[in-house]
Length: 64
Image (cartoon, rainbow, N blue to C red):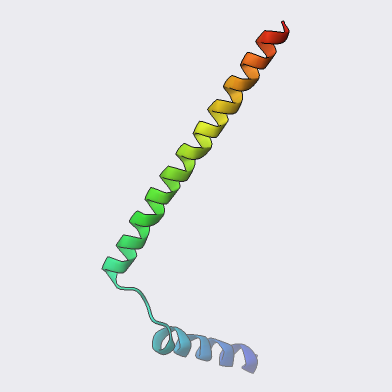
């Protein structure tokens, strides 16, 4: 039990004194960057999916 208490004390000290937390502006900028990157990646995946789907439709129509 003493080890758990010591661990919690050390964790609290590390989180309050040793960790450098981002400012609110930095956090907002990072969130916007992640949002934009997610949208771009999803659009690329959508384009690849549509292209593959259309190619397969054309392929199956050519066999029929």
